[in-house]
Length: 138
Image (cartoon, rainbow, N blue to C red; front, side, top):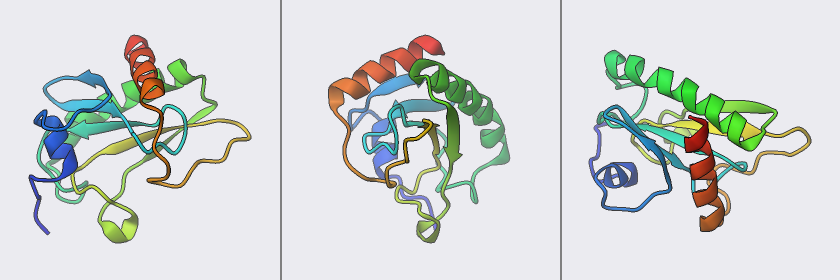
């Protein structure tokens, strides 16, 4: 399958759709997931146009993975999470719903189960506050 430049993340990267941005550089955009699996669920979206891990340029992956690690540490610091889950889906059968490569950084809290992928929408004010807290921890 080929990359579709009309996907929602491509539109967000182009500034056509708003997002709760945490951080942005030439490599990637970091933003809050509006349908979080837990409080602080953050997405790292590479700017390179690839559908997923399977068609990504290895150089693009090498450039973004250090950012994924930095963001994971910042999310844990900002949220006080007990652990961090990193998820990345490839094709619909594996759970991918947006066909632009992205990484989910999902805080895990002792005794609190994760919500389902794509469950309920989070409060916009809470997302904005979390974005600021995570950005400050970066």
